[in-house]
Figure (tube, rainbow, N blue to C red):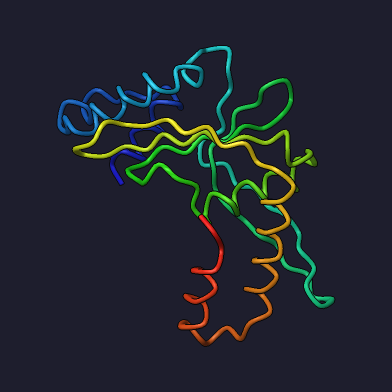
Length: 168
């Protein structure tokens, strides 16, 4: 929670030293993100932090809007997503929904999309994972979203079952 707030303040160019001094673990994670993704700290590069992305999805003549929050930098007009967190260095279903939604909102070909995951850990070394999105993953994610939206809303057990069905 504090780490996320500090990263946001850092990109807004607000003072972060008091938080860094009070939380050495957070200071270490910030240094690791700076080391593994130096491109997002370059002054000429604009990074949209916690940016809302919305994509429409029609299921059985019902219109839905899928909204996610992500960090986006643009390279030659193409969005590239950045996610940094204490997490496993692998593509999650949340990452897939962020990639799907961003591809739709910005009208880009799935193969042009990328996600950079900076996986941090209190003990293990940090890892950078570069994920290239593609049409196959894009279609899989859309089918999964449609399946999720087609199911009755009150059954949490069924929702958990569908969450297990999307491959990581």
